[in-house]
Length: 288
Image (tube, rainbow, N blue to C red):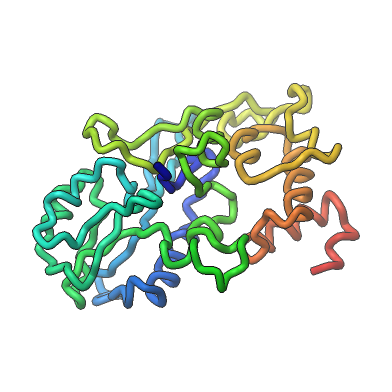
């Protein structure tokens, strides 16, 4: 059975909220309808979001760290929100494993919200309907879009490629490879809901700058698979998730190769690509 899901790399999420704003924009204009912002600027703001980023501080100086944790519906394989719905508005789609809501049937009773242990459901105060992440179900199958753009809005908007989208039941998918290579884990598996979304754990590496958490390494680091990209081997987004911590120049060369192969979303990463190319291949910046 196909199970589409997100794999989020906590090692490189910078808490920029690009995923939050892109999700809000797409779903407000998509099939999910208008997502309300009742008091967007008041002291007690209220709005409907499918995706949020929670930020935590851990440790003590000089070993303090900031952790950004994106969270949305986890599209559980055994979702507790589905059986409690009295009208059948909440359902799990067989063909791709997405947990969705039929807004025509929803009566806003909040049973699904109470049943969800992750707090992923939100009541739209204007429509009086329960809303949640759909993994952009109205986008990923939209043939009017270029194939490279048939991904959730949050994935396309992420400037650090921290989000990977794919079928976690397909061992050849980028999502499955990243989970296997980095030990991807589920959120609160003890609830028995079998969350489909996975998180790639944060890693601390010994670095040349001495911070230990910046992700860079000394030049004496062993050669990584990213170096092989210069010799014509294929690359995709999962390589960045697997090879976090490789020397900065190797990552930049890999990024350039990925752009050339058409696998990089330039709309989301144009600024980053320009800065990379200015150092790696100055002549290429003339194309922008």
